[in-house]
Amino acid sequence: MTGVNHLIDGLWQGFRGREAAVFAELGDGRHYTYADLDAVSARFAAALVGLGVKPGDRVAAQVEKSIEALMLYLGAVRAGAVFLPLNTAYTPAEIGYFVGDAEPALLVCDPAREAALRPLAEGVGARLETLGASKGGAVPQGSLLGLVPATADDFRDVARGPDDLAAILYTSGTTGRSKGAMLSHDNLLSNARVLAATWAFTAADVLIHALPIFHTHGLFVATNTTIVSGARLIWMERFDADAVIGAIPRATALMGVPTFYTRLLADPRLDRELTKGMRLFISGSAPLLAETHRQWEARTGHAILERYGMTECSMNTSNPYDGERRAGTVGFPLAGVELRITEPETGRPLAQGEIGMIEVRGPNVFKGYWRMPEKTAEELRPDGWFITGDLGMIDDRGYVVIVGRGKDLIISGGFNVYPKEVEGEIDRIPGVLESAVIGVPHPDFGEGVVAVVVPAKGAALTEADIVGPLSERLAKFKQPKRVFFADSLPRNTMGKVQKKELRDQHAGAFA
Ligand code: AMP
Figure (cartoon, rainbow, N blue to C red):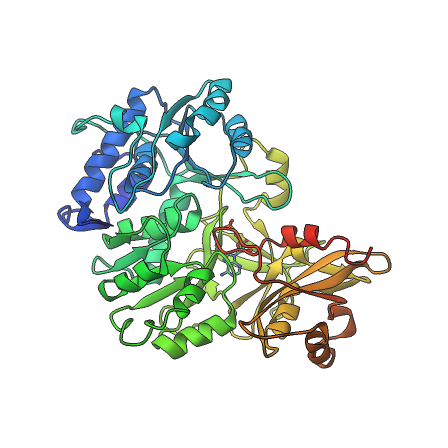
């Protein structure tokens, strides 16, 4: 180790002198100490350098979650490369776009995908190696591991400064092409440090890690915050409510998407006794229903701490660790992060309480979109403010409230309808589990408001049951003109409702 790689140096300070401590429990009794984390990630880095990966080269990976996949991330950073994780759900055709756009030097994929992806890799002159899934913490199969040397004690981290790129994360791209958000070493390190401080992480913490690691939440928030605190992970290949319930008595913290919390609430074993050793439940990546917040507190005595972030910025805001965690809000800007609300058309800053575009500025904000200078210029102002695309406001006590994605805003007859407000009213109606409100083409109004409602188990609801109560609570232009019922809402792995899918499905509602 030398003191030259900004992100690695900063993270590694979290466990200096405590190398024998456990970094990750892997299941089946296997574990990684911090000494293992250091040694194995160095071996991965040595393998990458041996493959000819140069500083600034992209190392792309579409692999299942395993501790080795995490070592590939850290090894890539130590080798001076730019790590590029890809959602395991992407099809080979989609991977073709990312590989063509990012032109990685190396693509690592699941052995089952090798045949489909090899021509794509060869098309851009990338090497292709494989890394398989890990079951119960067991070592995966794959050609990459054959290239990892047994020791790499002489490996020296490749020098990288604060502004050098550590990763490119593609946005989920629900409209148009995915964009590669370029994240620097300091983007990641500054965020890890501020989160560890905000959430009071220490070496005594044990975090349940059940998130995927192709996304900022599981890859950076959960992992970097743990390492920079010298804390411990209980590593799970996927979320499984039974396994999480089993781990809670040994843990102190959980980071999850809202669906983790609703699934855990469905388990009768979840109660105060089970969670008495826990100090923190964190939620993010998608809105947590105020109802889930309330139910969780009633069952466990813990108020879930909701925070707000995105691929381009890691985390922006958090509810307080000490102080009121307000349901339906995402809290305050993190230390060092500025947040303002602006008028979408003009960029004029708005007053407290007014709804507008959320903009953020700070050391967490990315360096721009990979090879998309026009998109970068549209969303990242020259003075550093990033136009997030989320609409929100700052409430009377300074808490940030998100009202939805800008692109989900419905304009019906010239009036703005914020889906979240309508969804909130629908969700209060007895017999409703949850809802999604969308705008679809309407011959008179431009867009017409449509509600998709999921009834609670056993509830029989009609359109009148929904429309009736809303007529007293919402202005006419906000009331759904059509109501559809569904068994569930389409969600991606991060728990986000896929509104585009719903809009496509109901595009003909007023035809
Ligand atoms: P991604 O880039 O995939 O992480 O998605 C980021 C988007 O997720 C944000 O721009 C928000 O729209 C949404 N998001 C993240 N956290 C929250 C939250 N706590 N509440 C509401 N929306 C959230």
